[in-house]
Image (spheres, rainbow, N blue to C red):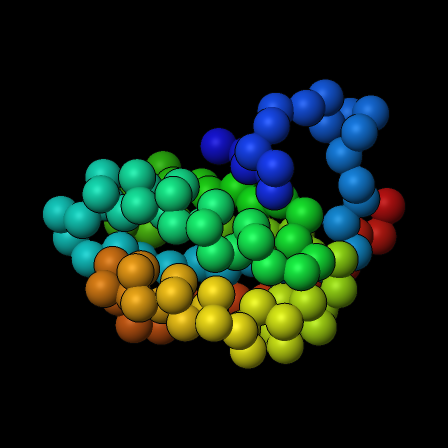
Length: 116
């Protein structure tokens, strides 16, 4: 699933902004909660992450080899938009309130910059 801030599907090859920063997070979901997590993630991400300044787009990926493992990629205009703007906001608090119960400990997250 590839989601844009305004929710519209577009021709990404011609209209998509090149992301300055891509946040990549790997996490495990508590057993038996995967289906509900996927549904809630789609809604809650649009209500929180997608409303944050500097947000460009996000994708959610389910691991084929490891049950309950997921990867999310969020494209941001700047690192500060994510770490200070979103993580320091009420939107992030809302995200945690609605989604934290799905996650096992030890979420791994890093930021990447597109080279070419």
